[in-house]
Length: 348
Ligand code: PMV
Image (tube, rainbow, N blue to C red; front, side, top):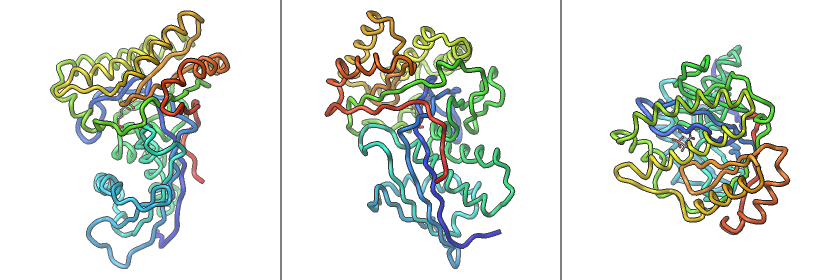
């Protein structure tokens, strides 16, 4: 069946990795397995309008509106995404698209929108494909959406399902694959099912190094192979921790993963640093607070200076008090976002 004209809308969340993906092989395949929490508040909403063309023409036809404004500068990224997925979605050239997209978090907050943005767009395209192939099994729909999202931005494949998501083949995790993200199939203690993530925006500037360039620097990196093995080891250890509800070991693994990610950046050729002085001060404050209060609060980082503060829901009051008293001073304009584990993408 073909379809003439219409639109689909999806809201897709961001995610935060506990075991980090850093380094790739082949066509957007991960050099090591990773595991993330799907977020709730930080999300992209995308509406894909489509109209069948009289004739397929060369090149992809689309307009892009970001927060209501036409953005030519975002188009090359979408264009190369369409190029990468075309062999899996042969109908692309037969349509003209208008992509209307907006984020729940402020632009240039230093929060990466590639995971939520690419997953939302992949889901809209899958809704089109589903309309053309009625009876498509739900499992196929979500797997292929994640597969496509991966081709847009690796970590985007972990933004389709809710809860904990694993991407990358790991012998100890049934069903895990390099091709798409899957809902973590292992047992998860209730304490880890309602984890909170308060994102401190310590540096709202643009990233100095794109994640594409960062992944690239893992080629020929002196510590790369050992690091890829370590990610698998940490993932195995984390499986036990998640099951047991062991927050102390969780902290050790998650903080070490964050620091290792940044250590890889600092020890590459060329080397670079994405942490800012405020990042370090926040980390020290978190360690100090944990020591004096016995809290289970810990941090993680993505490829930037912002700090994700992770803690169990039952500690929310105490940790927010600590954040407001001691950490807000390090946030640009006092800005932070209260997020938590979410349920994955939804069609609107
Ligand atoms: O999806 P990318 O190519 O932007 O890579 C993101 C990598 C990290 O955010 C640093 C880690 C991760 O696993 O999400």
